[in-house]
Image (cartoon, rainbow, N blue to C red; front, side, top):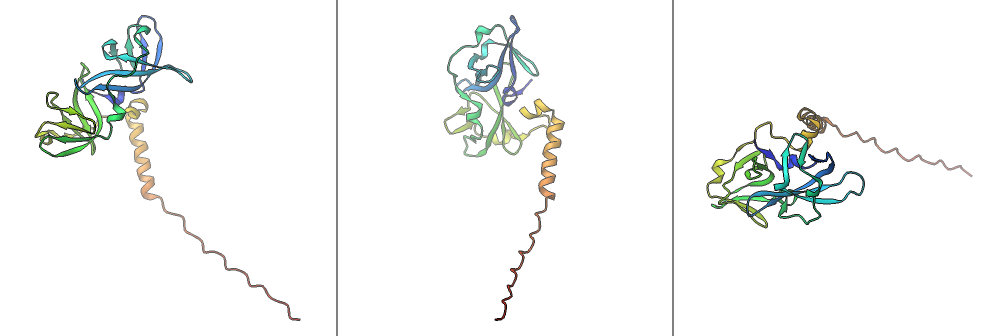
Length: 203
Protein backbone atom coordinates (compact mmCIF):
# COMPACT_ATOMS: atom_id res chain seq x y z
CA UNK A 1 0.00 0.00 0.00
CA UNK A 2 1.39 3.35 -1.03
CA UNK A 3 1.64 6.20 1.47
CA UNK A 4 2.48 9.86 1.04
CA UNK A 5 5.42 11.17 3.01
CA UNK A 6 3.42 14.26 3.89
CA UNK A 7 0.93 12.06 5.78
CA UNK A 8 3.67 10.82 8.13
CA UNK A 9 4.49 14.31 9.36
CA UNK A 10 2.63 15.07 12.57
CA UNK A 11 2.08 11.42 13.54
CA UNK A 12 2.81 10.30 17.10
CA UNK A 13 5.75 8.02 17.85
CA UNK A 14 5.05 5.44 20.59
CA UNK A 15 7.28 2.71 22.04
CA UNK A 16 5.93 -0.85 22.08
CA UNK A 17 7.81 -2.15 25.12
CA UNK A 18 7.44 0.91 27.38
CA UNK A 19 4.28 2.56 26.11
CA UNK A 20 6.00 5.95 25.97
CA UNK A 21 4.91 8.75 23.67
CA UNK A 22 8.20 10.01 22.28
CA UNK A 23 6.68 12.94 20.42
CA UNK A 24 5.48 13.74 16.93
CA UNK A 25 7.20 13.53 13.55
CA UNK A 26 8.45 16.96 12.49
CA UNK A 27 10.32 16.07 9.31
CA UNK A 28 10.82 13.04 7.08
CA UNK A 29 14.22 12.62 5.42
CA UNK A 30 14.99 10.89 2.13
CA UNK A 31 18.24 9.26 1.04
CA UNK A 32 18.62 10.75 -2.47
CA UNK A 33 21.05 8.06 -3.60
CA UNK A 34 19.02 5.05 -2.50
CA UNK A 35 15.63 6.73 -3.27
CA UNK A 36 14.47 5.51 0.10
CA UNK A 37 13.38 7.11 3.38
CA UNK A 38 16.36 7.48 5.72
CA UNK A 39 14.55 8.40 8.91
CA UNK A 40 12.58 11.10 10.68
CA UNK A 41 12.99 13.87 13.23
CA UNK A 42 10.76 13.52 16.29
CA UNK A 43 10.04 16.35 18.72
CA UNK A 44 9.27 15.61 22.37
CA UNK A 45 5.78 16.61 23.59
CA UNK A 46 5.37 19.81 25.53
CA UNK A 47 6.75 23.32 25.17
CA UNK A 48 10.45 23.40 24.32
CA UNK A 49 10.65 19.67 23.53
CA UNK A 50 13.95 18.39 22.17
CA UNK A 51 14.37 16.87 18.71
CA UNK A 52 15.70 13.35 18.20
CA UNK A 53 16.47 11.16 15.20
CA UNK A 54 14.90 7.80 14.34
CA UNK A 55 16.45 5.65 11.64
CA UNK A 56 13.89 4.05 9.39
CA UNK A 57 15.21 0.56 10.15
CA UNK A 58 14.08 1.07 13.77
CA UNK A 59 10.44 1.71 12.83
CA UNK A 60 8.40 -1.36 13.77
CA UNK A 61 5.11 -0.48 12.07
CA UNK A 62 3.00 2.46 10.95
CA UNK A 63 -0.69 2.81 11.81
CA UNK A 64 -3.27 5.39 10.82
CA UNK A 65 -2.19 7.87 13.48
CA UNK A 66 0.77 6.31 15.30
CA UNK A 67 4.27 5.13 14.37
CA UNK A 68 5.63 2.37 16.63
CA UNK A 69 9.24 1.78 17.58
CA UNK A 70 10.45 -0.90 19.98
CA UNK A 71 11.96 1.24 22.75
CA UNK A 72 12.85 4.82 23.67
CA UNK A 73 16.59 4.25 23.17
CA UNK A 74 15.96 4.18 19.42
CA UNK A 75 15.39 7.95 19.50
CA UNK A 76 18.94 9.22 19.20
CA UNK A 77 20.56 12.64 19.42
CA UNK A 78 22.02 12.47 15.92
CA UNK A 79 21.86 14.88 12.98
CA UNK A 80 19.39 13.97 10.22
CA UNK A 81 20.64 12.02 7.22
CA UNK A 82 19.66 12.92 3.65
CA UNK A 83 17.26 15.66 2.55
CA UNK A 84 13.94 16.54 4.16
CA UNK A 85 10.66 16.47 2.28
CA UNK A 86 10.31 20.18 3.06
CA UNK A 87 13.55 20.90 1.17
CA UNK A 88 12.41 18.85 -1.82
CA UNK A 89 8.92 20.37 -2.08
CA UNK A 90 8.51 22.57 -5.14
CA UNK A 91 11.59 21.15 -6.86
CA UNK A 92 11.36 20.94 -10.66
CA UNK A 93 10.85 17.44 -12.08
CA UNK A 94 12.34 16.93 -15.55
CA UNK A 95 12.74 13.92 -17.83
CA UNK A 96 16.10 13.17 -19.41
CA UNK A 97 14.69 13.87 -22.85
CA UNK A 98 14.33 17.52 -21.83
CA UNK A 99 10.66 17.81 -20.80
CA UNK A 100 9.57 19.65 -17.67
CA UNK A 101 6.97 17.47 -15.98
CA UNK A 102 6.01 19.81 -13.15
CA UNK A 103 7.05 20.62 -9.60
CA UNK A 104 7.20 18.17 -6.70
CA UNK A 105 4.23 18.22 -4.31
CA UNK A 106 4.70 14.96 -2.42
CA UNK A 107 6.41 11.55 -2.59
CA UNK A 108 4.75 8.13 -2.58
CA UNK A 109 6.52 5.26 -0.81
CA UNK A 110 5.83 1.53 -0.59
CA UNK A 111 5.92 -0.79 2.44
CA UNK A 112 9.71 -0.96 2.19
CA UNK A 113 10.00 2.86 2.41
CA UNK A 114 11.17 3.04 -1.21
CA UNK A 115 10.11 5.91 -3.46
CA UNK A 116 7.73 4.61 -6.12
CA UNK A 117 5.84 7.67 -7.35
CA UNK A 118 6.05 11.44 -7.35
CA UNK A 119 3.04 13.68 -6.85
CA UNK A 120 3.38 16.66 -9.15
CA UNK A 121 1.70 20.03 -9.50
CA UNK A 122 -1.72 20.18 -11.19
CA UNK A 123 -2.78 16.99 -9.36
CA UNK A 124 -0.66 14.61 -11.42
CA UNK A 125 1.30 11.47 -10.51
CA UNK A 126 4.25 9.82 -12.23
CA UNK A 127 5.98 6.52 -11.46
CA UNK A 128 9.74 6.52 -11.13
CA UNK A 129 12.41 4.03 -12.09
CA UNK A 130 14.92 4.25 -9.19
CA UNK A 131 17.73 3.06 -11.44
CA UNK A 132 17.41 6.12 -13.67
CA UNK A 133 16.03 8.74 -11.26
CA UNK A 134 18.33 11.46 -9.93
CA UNK A 135 17.42 13.57 -6.90
CA UNK A 136 19.78 16.43 -7.57
CA UNK A 137 20.53 19.71 -5.87
CA UNK A 138 18.07 21.78 -7.90
CA UNK A 139 16.00 19.30 -9.91
CA UNK A 140 14.73 15.73 -9.98
CA UNK A 141 15.56 13.91 -13.22
CA UNK A 142 13.53 10.96 -14.47
CA UNK A 143 14.21 8.63 -17.37
CA UNK A 144 13.47 9.70 -20.94
CA UNK A 145 9.84 9.10 -21.85
CA UNK A 146 8.61 9.60 -18.28
CA UNK A 147 6.06 12.14 -19.51
CA UNK A 148 4.06 9.28 -21.04
CA UNK A 149 3.68 7.75 -17.55
CA UNK A 150 1.99 10.81 -16.03
CA UNK A 151 -1.62 10.32 -14.92
CA UNK A 152 -4.18 12.21 -12.88
CA UNK A 153 -4.03 11.68 -9.13
CA UNK A 154 -6.95 9.66 -7.68
CA UNK A 155 -9.38 11.50 -5.44
CA UNK A 156 -8.33 9.55 -2.35
CA UNK A 157 -4.86 11.12 -2.45
CA UNK A 158 -4.98 13.30 0.65
CA UNK A 159 -2.45 15.25 2.66
CA UNK A 160 -1.84 15.93 6.33
CA UNK A 161 -4.86 18.18 6.90
CA UNK A 162 -7.24 15.66 5.36
CA UNK A 163 -5.76 12.88 7.52
CA UNK A 164 -6.19 14.89 10.72
CA UNK A 165 -9.55 16.58 10.11
CA UNK A 166 -11.13 14.21 7.59
CA UNK A 167 -11.30 14.58 3.83
CA UNK A 168 -14.92 15.77 3.88
CA UNK A 169 -14.11 18.61 6.28
CA UNK A 170 -11.13 19.74 4.22
CA UNK A 171 -13.11 19.66 0.98
CA UNK A 172 -16.03 21.55 2.52
CA UNK A 173 -13.69 24.20 3.91
CA UNK A 174 -11.88 24.59 0.58
CA UNK A 175 -15.23 24.83 -1.22
CA UNK A 176 -16.54 27.43 1.20
CA UNK A 177 -13.41 29.55 0.78
CA UNK A 178 -13.64 29.28 -3.00
CA UNK A 179 -17.32 30.29 -3.01
CA UNK A 180 -16.65 33.18 -0.65
CA UNK A 181 -13.90 34.50 -2.91
CA UNK A 182 -16.23 34.42 -5.92
CA UNK A 183 -19.26 36.00 -4.23
CA UNK A 184 -17.59 38.67 -2.13
CA UNK A 185 -18.51 42.09 -3.47
CA UNK A 186 -16.33 45.02 -2.52
CA UNK A 187 -18.11 47.57 -0.36
CA UNK A 188 -19.34 50.65 -2.18
CA UNK A 189 -17.46 53.78 -1.45
CA UNK A 190 -19.57 56.62 -0.16
CA UNK A 191 -18.82 59.98 -1.70
CA UNK A 192 -16.83 62.25 0.55
CA UNK A 193 -18.97 64.96 2.18
CA UNK A 194 -18.70 68.37 0.58
CA UNK A 195 -17.04 71.00 2.75
CA UNK A 196 -19.51 73.42 4.33
CA UNK A 197 -19.36 77.03 3.21
CA UNK A 198 -18.74 79.46 6.01
CA UNK A 199 -20.94 82.54 5.81
CA UNK A 200 -19.14 85.70 6.65
CA UNK A 201 -20.99 88.37 8.58
CA UNK A 202 -21.35 91.76 6.90
CA UNK A 203 -19.83 94.62 8.85
